[in-house]
Image 1 (cartoon, rainbow, N blue to C red):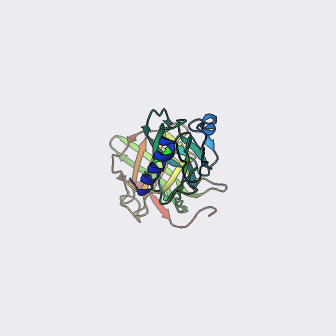
Image 2 (image 1 turned 120 degrees about the horizontal axis):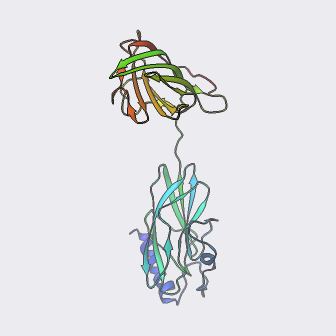
Image 3 (image 1 turned 135 degrees about the vertical axis):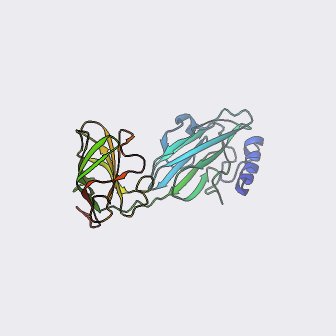
Length: 291
């Protein structure tokens, strides 16, 4: 346990367990009732100032945070915690409550499981700022004690993908399937979204995807080792989920360009995809649509 925890436990033993002296910054005769805890429930979104009877988590930065909150009982404490919990950027949430009196409290530790950690700090009713607070340090809460823990996280948004691919009447006959694919994917729609529309005809059934959910480089799986390969996915008008991966291997397209196709969880040409028999895939490195 960090030094701050030992110091806070020592102060708590004097003020909370013995009840003869108060912690630094507290009234010499602290009130045993915790009206703040009586007003609020676990999960309530509240202000960031520390209050007796409550442990709060505040989130700053550009991403939400998910937290595990653990509690150890001191004395006859009946305190409660909310775990796990997610706190949105710019908000504070009650994660622990304890109305215990002298000798009864909760010792609470908090750990975050989110990306982009920058810093963490704590402030308590008996300290303006808890010096050297580190994640996982124990904080006490009861009718005399309460703290706010503030996390700052920042995740850089991914760079916009402006390139696009076009594919003209690709024909593949393999494994009992005759597949004809045509369309385009990639680039930015005016007002947001991805420019794309394509048809995937499998043995005479057209899976027409008019709006895609995603488009971009392939990071794993089929065709991921091929430079400038791209994946796009969406729901066809017939309700089927379609994932299409394409790779432009240069000219000519037939016998060189590659396709991977997954419809409703079925890999049409297997896990590695296949080369096309007819047609052409063209990768365009330029940006299409507004940047």
